[in-house]
Image (cartoon, rainbow, N blue to C red; front, side, top):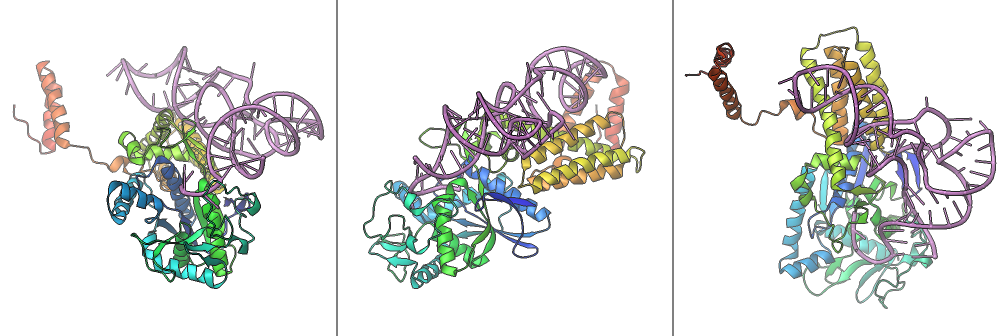
Length: 457
RNA sequence: GCCAAGGUAGCUUAGAGGCGAAGCGGUGGACUGCAGAUCCAUUACACGUGAGUUCAAAUCUCACCCUUGGCUCCA
């Protein structure tokens, strides 16, 4: 299995640090507002990655942070006149609900920044002790000049960095030095050896990953926009603190989601939250939409594209229902089995080849559609046995499991309301009786009788 | 300016030296009491432009055009 590594800009054979265990960390949301469909794209993608790694036999520990202390939260809380912690908890809960509806279930543990202050402080202290950080009257800063490899992920040189967009802080040694600890005199704040304040943005992730994974682990993921400066800062912090390199073996980044060709932003008025989306479309459809583009490519959101996804997904489900129905009454063995087995083998193999190639879900989906077409063609005049049908269904189950679709329930979902059904039957029987179709109306009565439903005319 | 991702059929997406690919859509058939599902054909001269390398280029090289994003808030 190959995975594209942002660090090397190449697909590399995936090898976990442990024979069967994989440690996966993905940057989580800042919970100051509802998550948008760009977040959904990223988290669906990594959910698929986790599912596929597990299918390949790995035991994956998928860890995600929740940024529940941050300027945006503080500002929003002040605007609304509410407690920042309550605000963060509220949007964290809404985030979890959104993820559930999208079928994103792979995260094993969510770590809140505010619950890891001890670890954050310890890590900052280590950086100070080793000379990678310094204290000013405003806070504690990472000293970029002590980490010459800064920029290795984003391929930037320190001297190229255009820093005049941010306000200069004359207390910092270099303009690019970033805050590890920000001193504050009003809430929310936490005690630290450098006085009360709160952690900088980048430090929570490395504190959390060190806590659960140690200084080195397998995969770190996030959106493309986090490469610089966030992930660059994480590398600088962790590799300096531990003296071990690399912090992670594989850096994976998801492409952006655009809306009708433009970046999604509040000012453009094309900002779509997951909740807005789910009012009109099932999570599964959005999931299909996301997975029909490669995770690293930009994806363009539009209602038309969602309609297409709805129909494409329908085609797959139709096939699964067809196979399930056939398998109920198929013979145990048959002469056409070899042929169906060959079809299955061919496209199944193709499917996994594409998944092994840096999670190429669009190509893997194409293999599934090819399988469907071949099966439909063959089913016109050939009959597979139950055994073969079940093998095919098993593949579709694996497929659903990897992609996070819910095909299994197609047959087990109970009919909405039996009384409604009965009413339809009785209405039709009444019409038959009016037409004096006694034979059919009697058949309905007797068959309902067999089900212990008695009709009294 | 620097960094990055792109431009592939009507639309949405894969591919990355040699079989013109998947879905959706359009058109015409087959099947069908009607509808749906499905199948076949077609849409089809698919690869931004111009050169170059090669027996062979959508794919490699160079130049250029266009789109989007990032450059210390960002999934």
